Every structure is written in C-alpha cells, then in structure tokens.
Amino acid sequence: MTPVFVVFIVFASIVAVVIGPSFLKNRERREMQLTVRHAVDKGQTLPAELIDAMTKDVQKGLPSRTKDMRKGVLSLAGGIGVGAFGVLSDLGGNQWNGGMANPLLGIACIPIAIGIAFIILGFFNPNKD
Image (cartoon, rainbow, N blue to C red; front, side, top):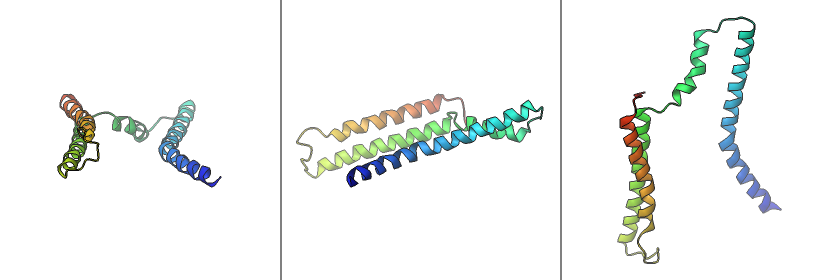
C-alpha cells in the first residue's frame, strides 16, 4: 500500500506544479472579467489603467525578435553541449554504447535544429519588443 501511495504523491505533485498556476491565473482572469462586466452593466466607465492591466498579459505573450533570438541561442547552446558531451565520452575509449556511433550526437541535432530555426525566426520577426 505504501509504494502505491508514494507513486500517487509523486505524480500528484507533478500535476499540481504544472496545472496549479494556470488554474489560478485562469480563475483570476475570470473574476476580473466578471467585475468588468458588472461595472459595464451598471454604466460605469472603465479607467485606462484597468484596460492596460488587462491587455498586459496579451502583449507579453506575443513573440518578439529578442525572445526568439534568446530561445534560439539557448537551444543551440544546449545542443552543442549535448554533442560535446557525446564527443568527449568517446575520447576516453569508453565502449558504453556498444561500439556503435555515438547516439548523443544524433540527439544533439534536435535542439541545434530548433535553435537555428528560432534564430532565423528572430531575424524575420517584425516585433522588436
């Protein structure tokens, strides 16, 4: 019974960390919209600060040149790091991979390709920030 309980706690904590913040943010947004709806129904005018606060999250989520370049450089560096680890692990004469070509070099191509794509998107993105 105890191992099942431990596994349940581990997976429940992962779900709570991933889903919890988005649930709380969604609830806050829903309450804000309800408050604004009641104010509009009663004929009150909305202050400019409230409208700016509501649109701040939308503007923050838009892709920009700086964000694309940052993601690209970080992904490219991660891929180079994995590839370098693969090369260095072969230099010591280790046969931990059964004598076949190093699979880490192939795995390193994935973040390198993603990084190059983000860098290219950064050059073509019209939003500077």
